[in-house]
Length: 517
Image (cartoon, rainbow, N blue to C red; front, side):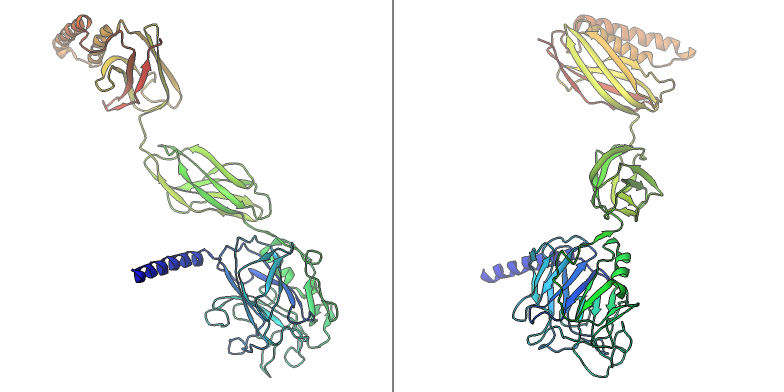
């Protein structure tokens, strides 16, 4: 029993773990940027800063290290001086959020935003047990994968302000030939591009260099907030430009909201599609939820649909206003009995975004689309009214009544008001009759049904015979009330039977009418 319980717990934990893993953000180069480093902070509480340029989903795992990359592509493994920090993102993080990290050689580092709010989920620290950032610069490398190894890793960003005349003969370069191993030396990690997803502020002078081309090789360095609002590409370009950095070999930067900033990352809107409801033969109710407008106004939003997967605005577009948030609207114009693919869309000055695609099947088109149907009894007078929104190939309506809601009898026939049986405009119908006259009307209803049968000259005798038969039935109905419906009934069931020109019929809903007391 205990073994079974342990197995069950293991399975549940495995499932939970798989859900967490599938929910995390899979990052690409440039999604994270390094914004500053203090090499002259007292060890071990040395500070550095980074920002995310994309939203981070809860459960996202990101690794940070000050270990350089060797010519083999592996990390320089020197635990006394180098460390790896893993952050499992505890909550949804908005794109553009800036963080300050304080290293800790005796435990876990501390991550806080610019409002000094700390985040959980940190394991380990950048920097080693005995030494942290050097006075001759260092590197910070961001990656996803197994902490401590480059095998299977995806590098996200790399920063380097190392100082070495032998290894960085050109300011702003990465190591290209190993002359010796060093704590502040690194090759450019695979998959990264200097100036966008990587930044080398390295110098061939240990005192640092300031030139027209930028600032290089200072112990303490920070991005000077030249650009804090723009697309991801624009921000990467600004942050990756050495001209936009400051450096100092004496004064450490008090990383916080006074000298760093969050970013307004503009881009296409982030949007989700809501599922279809109220599906009819030609319409449905749908919408979307614009979670993030891309930090710019959403000028248009709505639904696109088509008969194949992933429709775009080039197919069929239903505009539903502008702005962010949840929206929904009913729309028509869909083909009947058809699989429809639809998804939400949003437009801002960065382009058009689409939500997830939903599919649904429209209903079969009815020959008559009813609007309101109502009935009432007042002083033994029954008033029946109904409206049609459209009619296709409609010939007539049968008004049927019942006292028990099961056995219906035809009261009368109402011809379609359309010229030829079809109409796209709303039409109104009404009928008033007396409960006392209902038995006679029931007989007349039978006569009217037979009257709809067209007889040619050769069948005139047959037609006359049928009318005589119906007449007898009519007289019988008047005297015996064979319909079973009593004029004194307090409750009456009424329905319409719509009859096509080809004789096909469709019943409306049943109305239950109570006599006024």
